[in-house]
Amino acid sequence: MVTRRKKRYLNLDTRGDKVFNIVNIFLLCIFTIIMFYPLYWTVIASLSDISEVGLGNVVFLPQGFSTEAYRQVLNHDAIWVGYRNSIIYTTLGVLYSMILMVPIAYTLSKKNLPGRTGITFYFIFTMYFSGGMIPHFILVANTLNLMDTMWALILGGLAVFQMVVTRTFFMSAIPEELYESAEMDGAGHIRSFFRIALPLAKPVIAVMALQFAVGAWNSFFPALMFINRAELQPLQLVIRRIVILNAQIGIGADFSTMTDEQINDIAVRQRLAESMRYSTIFIASAPMLIIYPFIQKYFAQGMLIGSLKG
Image 1: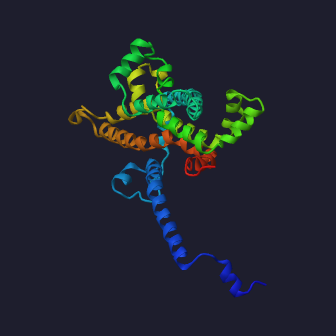
Image 2: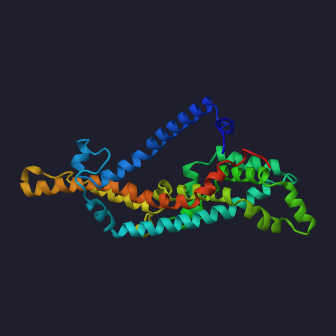
Image 3: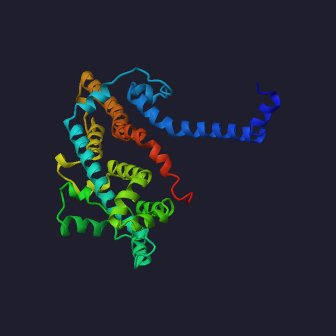
């Protein structure tokens, strides 16, 4: 049996360590609530009577439970078209970005690359100084003739920050001795890239892909500039159109000439439109919330990139 003295020696945490851990857990719980509650409140507000929301009665549970807002939103065929388009733009955009970014990051991680410093400076310079919106619009619309095409959103610019982070991973997390051993066995740079670098870079690739995917899924302004055809609009523009149309309900109406039934009908539609705003927020956020748990372990590893050298 383990004596009380041995138990005391086995427990390496001092009283200060225990207090520190308790404070950390408490603060983390507070931060978790602060970050999670707005989304939770949006969900319960979308399931509640909008009058109860306006009165401030919706705090922790739905009041006047109703799924009518979700039924109205999901009955729009445009929502499903927008979902399809956003999935296509996000998937192809991530593949395009990763195919460009990962090889560039691997190449720039080689210390013996001729002109490595100048090439790196060229990429970093564009991260801080860009041409701006008007030159970008002229390039896409006039020079490349991609206006009203899906390629206008897929063939975006290279995310230099993610490239620099990936380059740092290749330089610090993968020992140079691995490449030297592979070279002694007759492997060239291409084989080393596919056989050594890519398998070991799964954490950083997962993190960068997630960041690309979130940015592409939530992308709004590029689609607003380059996409006019309704059948090519992503989910964000479709939701914007639905919200704007619902917000215009009752505007310009002459209530003095309406019957009580017509006025009540407009009031009901206005309350439903307000509830639909909350439901569309959750509908647009749901895919990213579903994907994240599947790559959480890679995300946790990737956040430590560059903190340790091995």
